[in-house]
Length: 373
Image (cartoon, rainbow, N blue to C red; front, side):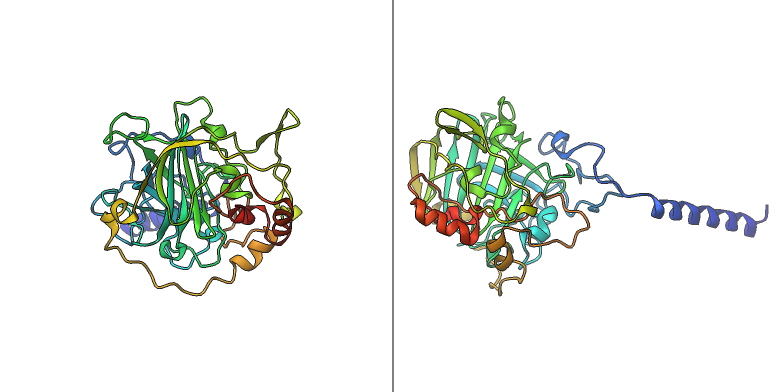
């Protein structure tokens, strides 16, 4: 066979392979769900944990091997932490002025301490934070200038979790670790079940003990339309920074009515705004709360500056806050069950029935809970 003939044959083969790959049908689900991928920190973590190809939502946006070479305000690290009041990360967008609905699959880690290979939360962005340690989970809830972590002003946000409708998680490939159960500040356990609500200038992040029998129940991920008030009931106060011990909350969606244990079923998003709820969440008892000042807690990020706030995106609070509907996404198939679950932070049991009902009719349960007092 001549050189020219051999080259032509190789070229034809390459074209055929490329064409076959291009025509291969896209799939939705990965070979292994994100929640079933377990890696020791830090040496066992691969560069990316989501390596499946030809899936509908595309490839993992960032990476999971994060170190001093990736630590800057452009980092795309997708390995997160929840350890204590002064040491945690939140999921937030890479591009400024983004909505949670549009970027849920591509969120990156923003942290309160250097040394993680991530972006750092700008000084002053955190305006009140409560850390809670309970028998089965650790939780951080607070108030934040969300524009400083690239969430558009007015965006009521949504939920991030390691599942998603396609089992790739939101963000895709996002990992979380904690030293809360290891007995050592330098030993980290992978958190298998967690949820993080971001939006409405508030947040809540809960990491459930992977050794506990009810991790999936405490870190439930099917109630994404009813926000922090029902998924992470708390007494966080704007302007207050405290670390507490607490009792376990009721499982999200589980409540008692007339002595009967009930399970709440979240209505489909197509049915419109959630205008009423059959129950109010119980805020678990807390104790041993130690107050701190933000200057002491977050001294390591005191020099980190954020972006100048810009006008809110047109897809944010207008439609999402009034209708409870998704604010939309350009991705062909989002794994989000809904993008309207805001992250209101403060809840308790003293809300007026009339006031609550009136507010619910205007903005929906997920957004109204922050105003209960």
